[in-house]
Figure (cartoon, rainbow, N blue to C red):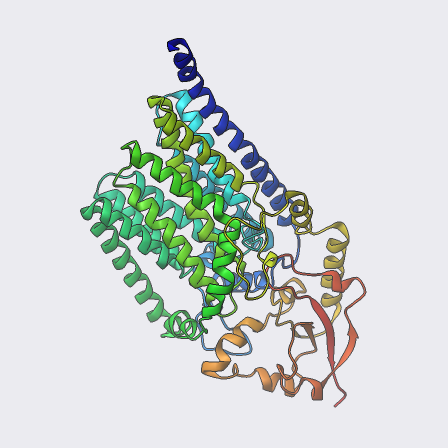
Length: 531
């Protein structure tokens, strides 16, 4: 009998190690798959998502010293985002060519840094080479869970958009808040989360989560964090408001707040989506926390992990409920629970190995396998349509169906040929071009860019039509206009009266589609009527 018990005790560490390794395998597959997708998309010469080119125009203006928070006009209207990402591209443009490749490389590196933070934070839960290897594999499991959400979050991680830079800033703030010990580290965390705000405003919700957790873990550090973040934000916002003549405040606060909040998007879409996709992750987080609590290994600093995991979910729900939001709003609902789960799983695995008690071992194995299962849980928001709710344990997608769909997110050779042909056709057109859905295409054609369609939508309700736009169309100032098929009737006054459709862009050129976000593509070429 005693011999049998000893044998069982000897088996326990092996079971935990096997579970961690097994969970890391699908995570490594997902990380490799994402790397392959990123490599196939980085060099595509046109928009992967319809606002990418608009961000490059922002960077171009900053590099030229023109500024972006200016009065709305036919020439330019900024997106309703803070300026860190295009400002970084503008700075880098002095040492590398500004373009899609530069922007995507910045996003890919930022995303890689955010994933590395999960692994590093997990490594902090172990000592000794063998234990650190297991902790690192737990971190890889968390990183794989995030990588598996590439489709679920709308294929945004590698785009010329601020999402991954925001994630890197938030992850850095979380890492420093969690692993730091004194007031200096709390101040650094405050600076990083303020930097995150200047990448994208939704950093505020995650930043509050970190602050609440820090206050619960260590009141002094929480106060230092909050004070540093507040002072940095006030100074940065004040400077931008002053240098823009007040337009920064108008765009970032007044106009952004004017976007409708769709309550039904939370209850009918966002919440069911995250339940359906991320239930292995949330269940692993709950089980791991319970296991550590029963083992008396839960720490006060774990309040930071739980607070930020909840804040990530709130940020996703609020973000998706905002008018014109897309699936990238779900990014924080996956990343921060994955971060928290990986760190706690790494510690519980160590506790299970040290204590060699079946209760801790069992919980650790289940939690580890659930974390690994999240890496197999590749899904798409389109899997749930309309105001239907799906139970939390239903709707596990089939990886065999998901991977081919992921592959379709990479432009194929025919689509690359169509992209090259489109730019050649645009370059051959005379005079100024108006391409409101893809403003950087004008730059690629060697011409001046004009206002982006998103900017027109952002301002017309509160500030009216941009100055000079309707007049330019009425007076035929544009030598040609290219519109996408999503253009609405009456959206461009005087267009049908002053211009005619020269041809449909349907043979080959129409395959220049979007690979993320709004599914739209160049559809019609308009030329001026004879005067």
